[in-house]
Amino acid sequence: MPKIGLVYIITALFFISCKSEKKEKDEIKIGAKQKEISSFDIGKKIFEGKGKCYTCHKIDKKSIGPGVVEIMKTYKEQNADLVAFLKQEAEPIVDPETYTVMKTNFAIIKTFSEEELKALEIYMTEVGK
Ligand code: HEC
Image (cartoon, rainbow, N blue to C red):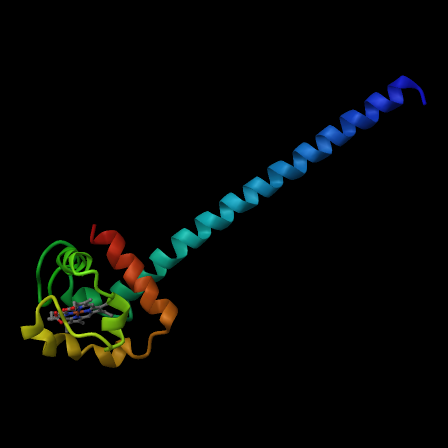
């Protein structure tokens, strides 16, 4: 085989392998980013939208209910499970005296899927930092 042919093949292989490697990396990056955005965004959308949470819960101040920062501080300190609370499987630990007010919202919360409850937890953990 003439030398020039071999050089051509090696060069071609080099470019092919480079190209596919780059493509793979880009895909992984985009995939991770999309996943990260979606849970937080689903949580935010529910919190401000159909969950009506924002009517009673502001982020860093008390309104009708305690602020998200206060809630998450208590949950972190006591290593408590927010999803369990939302499923009514755990007792209130932030402000048990006004729990009856929070209770009125469980009719809505009951309709949420496990994934939506997790998304709410992710959103509240993030903004409550
Ligand atoms: C009608 C007003 C109201 C709405 C709407 C509401 N909450 Fe609350 N929430 C409260 C009040 C008042 C408390 C304080 C009583 C308590 O600690 O349970 C509270 C407490 C909480 C707590 C702390 C529970 C604990 O351990 O004490 C979490 C978590 C919470 N709310 C999440 C939510 C989420 C998520 C939504 C929306 C899906 C929501 N709330 C909607 C009034 C409300």
